[in-house]
Length: 431
Image (cartoon, rainbow, N blue to C red):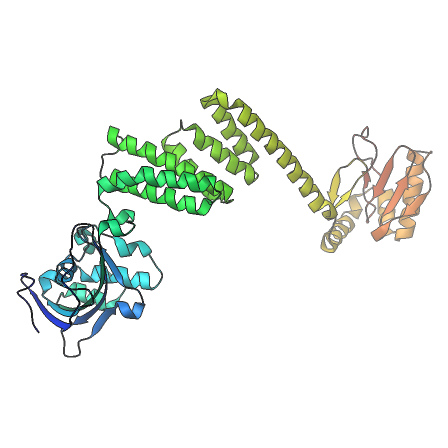
């Protein structure tokens, strides 16, 4: 049947498809309404634009919270639990539907879940977009037309009957919720339930930021809210440290420090995060800043610096072991990179090209075989130091000269001799 008098709203016609049970529920500000919807064009085919049942998730709306498509609030208030009704709505009620539908479609695609709960006026936003990303919605936005909504009311919950998320609260309710959420987060943190604690802290921060956005920046009321938000953010960062999300800690604490450079705890937590990711210089700078801001933290900072130094030494030793096999160690503890075959070939070609500029003894050495090179090197070295022992051929065409106090190594092409002697040797002798 058609029941347009029940609504008392111009431009709306209602047809009940399936009657509900009992009386019409009590709808008050803060009541949470859960329902399914289907939107159709007013054409011969009754083209379906959107259907929440196909998505598999009902719609939720809180009465009095400025939902974008406020006509839905009027329609739902006329329904009983379990009722299914069809509403014809004129253009004056459907202008913002394309924006609402965009949000609902994106959440169905796994994008922007917050768009389910955008309860601010969308009029300004509507004109800020050239395209909504969906052809049918773009067309509807360009040429608004009446729409048909088929609604099924599933349940109505009073404010005391459900946990109200921040988007569903008034500013007064948000501010009252902050200390409660803060306390719950602290309790969860002490129990070691860090991820659950972060959710409480985030919800409290969201409450504050929502209220703060309506205040004038840097005025007393705004600064009071800012301090509350910073405290909760630092608690959140403590949880992130325990969850090993170090870079997120650095990001959030840096944001606080950039705005409020006198917050000691922000430097302390950022220093600990830097320490965990081997940023030695940054960690020490942050801990020094902690001491500057609060000398009573000296004992704690000393402890953190001791841990930092120990970890950095372990890291350096780990790196030494890691790259040990990539270098050839010398007697002094210094290292030289091992040459690749390509590098050795390049060195050989370079040496051969420069033979005309070398001294006669070097040029002869280059023309000799590896065995002859060893002999020549031995004779030359013996002239320099009569106390040298015999020469033993090394790997890869290298020759090693051994002596009681010094050791020298010639490279493959015999054109230079690198010192491997004790530390008192200041440079490589020439051949």
